[in-house]
Length: 445
Image (cartoon, rainbow, N blue to C red):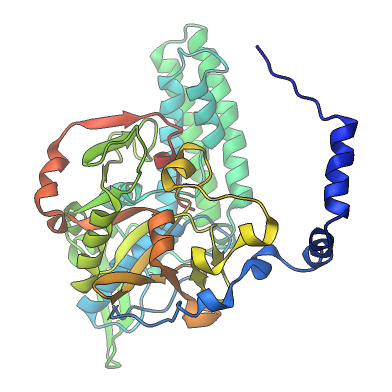
């Protein structure tokens, strides 16, 4: 039975009186009208603990800039790889081409979308899975395993081999146009299959869509290079040129098969995801026919311990978090203690991490790189973060996060399997398949 509780005139009068009789609430009207809530909620006393100093501090390169695009996961991943390549080639600064990887991810994602539409063609209009596939469509966001799939299939290239364009740096319009095109193709595919079309007819629609999409991506990104020369000047000022690379040979030479040694761990303390088990998400991926996304769910003490050990061994860590909570882009900090919105507004928003996931208040939406940690009395209290929002502002574009913020808002990290210890054997266990709209299927952008 539907519950209906209309707001009455008496209730409205009571609410208005509550506001008008409270000088504090009335004064906040003046304050809120001219000042952002983030600035008003900032606690300068608590923020004193957010010193940009770390007992483990890995020296990394200049912060990169994803500009007006949702490619943070690619920038974070290439920032991990560039440290390996720079060390190998004695480079002071270096970037891989994020556009090259984004081109192939976008193209593969289009094919993955079409496959998903064909796979669910027997489901009725309005089916939740079909609606979800259509709603998500193809966009910039992604996860670590998607990056691995692209690198394994297409390799990597230096940034000079496929630079940025106006479209790669600001992707909103091209994404909207691609998704409009794909929705039309989804309609054609579902209608054709419902009408009893042969597989050959369906394949004609799919290939036509891919052909047109490929040309459009080339127009926006340029045609990806099949070969290139690697020119660079090392830290000692010596010029080098290494000729005749392909994207695959460059990958093989620079990083080998090291990506196979890494696994995603998550912290999802919800009842439907017991710890020490593997999970994947239905209809989450980018490259049809390649490995599905997999996570090992661990409790937070073990999660942090593994990440800490990798950092203390001098290796940076790709991670995913909710960057929209308790942060300041100017001061480059994330700290729940430094922003007291509840005190300011009178609205109680305190929830556990489990509750925030279950009630859609928080999930991973941004990927970055951990490059340091500060240990006090044997426990971490601050984490150093390499972001991809440019090098302007405090700390040259690097950020700092408190440990309490880390515990609440970090959901995923990528670590070498050797740091799992006895838990590594869990990687061979059964995989639980989560529904497409599970919060662990969110994409970092």
